[in-house]
Length: 108
Image (cartoon, rainbow, N blue to C red; front, side):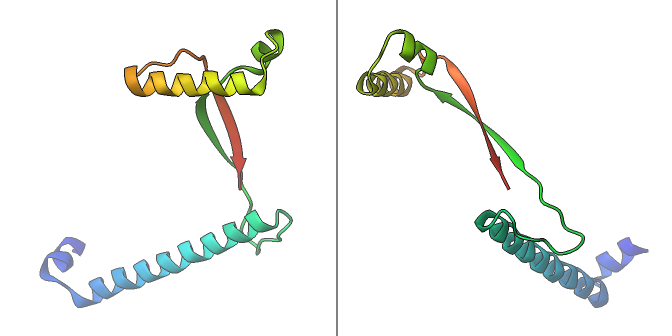
């Protein structure tokens, strides 16, 4: 029966969909506002029924390992040069010579 209402262009059904879309937009805006407030103040008290959750994001980075830099006693300027050279070689040849490491960031 719903299929018949959709195909015949039932105005009541389309108004229900528009109402649900408005409610969804308002809910999304409210959630964005709560997220922003939690980012500004990590002790922000959420309304009842809501809870905070952390989002993990992992990125792959190509950088000189700290242990290697300590063993060879590399100054910061040489570390930067090595990392820039790795980026240049990647852009030209599509390959890195530095070992990839993952960096995990936690976000509200």
